[in-house]
Image (cartoon, rainbow, N blue to C red):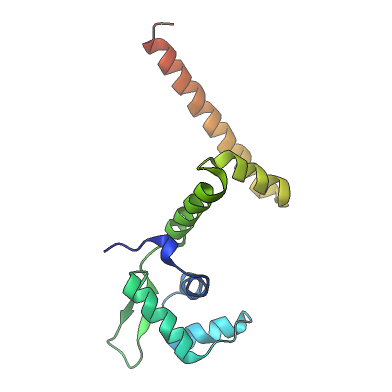
Length: 141
């Protein structure tokens, strides 16, 4: 069964982020990374989160060594996409533009981020013009 990305709780997401950022890790290594980030959690708590994530299909474990080594089965992008989709539905009835506008207004963007955003806008503009051109040719206008 494929995992449903919105089924990840906040604390579980922190554990998953550690695996995305640091790569495959044991329970102790995940715990140490969380401690370094200021999250003081017990070994057994981390083990519980990793067990739940494995049961939900978000991580897999390699049991061939002395300690289990956990690695993510889903990408950060897949989880981000799913969670953003849920957020869009909850707050904006599925409309992306209000969310994007809110983010651009409220967050300071770097020059590189602005350039990337401008490039995406230009690409969308070109696609939109092509689409309009094709539909007007089909309708005989």
